[in-house]
Structures are given as C-alpha cells and as structure tokens.
Length: 269
Picture (cartoon, rainbow, N blue to C red):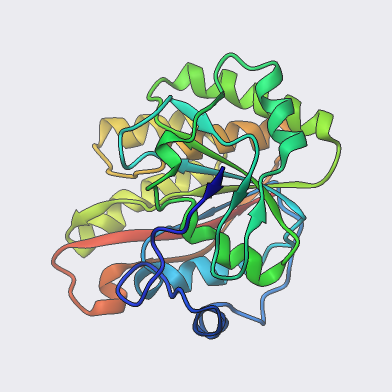
C-alpha cells in the first residue's frame, strides 16, 4: 500500500508544494534549540498556522533517528483499536517514505493488540501532519504508523509492553512520536486550566493520573490513548524525565480567545 497524501494543499493543514512547505517549516522551527536523544515526543497535529510553532519548536529539540513509531488518535472511527501499517510507503510532498517492515513485523508477531489494518489510516490527519516536520530534519526516516482508538487503561499498559519488547528486539534507535492536541473549543482560560492538568501528569510520567484527569474532568484531549501507550512504552524503555518545550492555544495565534484549542510540545527522555 502507498498511503496517499490527503491533508496537504493551499486551504488545508499544510502546503503541498515542497518548496513552499520547506520555507513554511523553516519559519516554524527553532534553530537555537539544543538537540537531545529522546524516547518519545508529544506534538500537536492541527493545521500548521495554528499549532505549527509548537510542533516546530518541539521537534527542533530532538535528534531524529532513522526509525520512528508514530502513535495517533482515530478521528474517523474506522478500523481496529490498534491499527497499523506493516509494509508499503507513505506519500509526502517531500517524497515517499517507507514503512519500517522489520519493526512492524516484530510488533505484530507477538502481539494480542496490534493488528495490520489500513482502514483508519486512509483519511486520518493526526499522523500525516507530523511527517514533514520529521522529514525536514532527517530525509532517511522510515516509520511505523499506528492509530489507537481503545479506551481501557489496562489495555494501554499491556499494548505498551508489547511495543517496548519489539523495540528492544529491533535493537536500533527508535523515536516514538505521540500525536495529540489538548483541550478543544472552550474559553482560553478554561483550556489553559484543563491543559495544565494534562501537562502536569505527563511531566510526572504518571499515566494513571493522565487517564484519570482526562476522564474525570472531561478533557477533550483527542490523543489521550496514544499518549498513555506512548508514555507506558517510554517508561518500559527507561524514560526518567519529561520536559515541556512549548504551550500555546489557537487564541494566541488568532487573537480570538472565546473558543480555542490547546497545543503542547513535550519531550520524554
């Protein structure tokens, strides 16, 4: 399968012209950031106009290895709870990138959760919009794209253990990219208050707290499931520290603070 680009274009999430895209990302990144080796990184996935500065500044701090697992939420409602692509390529304005078949096969081989299923990937934006940022810094990346739509905390823990075991067997550097926006369409102050709870839980590497806060306080964080699985996986791989790189709401960009979306960028190492 070649997963076709869906969300690129003049009136879409990001430019489809590679020269324009390159110039756009160059304005969003922060060349002054010191790069670090990380287990995982959380990045927003809205249109570049809204969340691009947070995504760009965040990924600017990370050494990008050749192999990346991207965990995204399911906005379409289609497919299996843990849907991944095993082979083929992913189309991008910067050029197609390969699915990392060796790592994908290791994940699928001994998993009771992850299944090969292209259905939810075809029109999902959460993974697609992250890829040009990654390609900008490393043209040689290959990826394992995974969409998660499960809602059970104990399943997250078990799936993460499977993912971590596969990464250990792969025995090469792997970065986990967690794709998620935070609170959606509430007032600027309410969004900031709710998002502070999410950020605090992630900074504490406390998956139980993150899950509890999101569900108890009805926080509309679309990527809670990918964040939980990603954090559990990073912990299994020895993560000890999380750092907030940037936080903004869409109101900080547009000047309209009546109904905003929150965007955070964090690194986990």
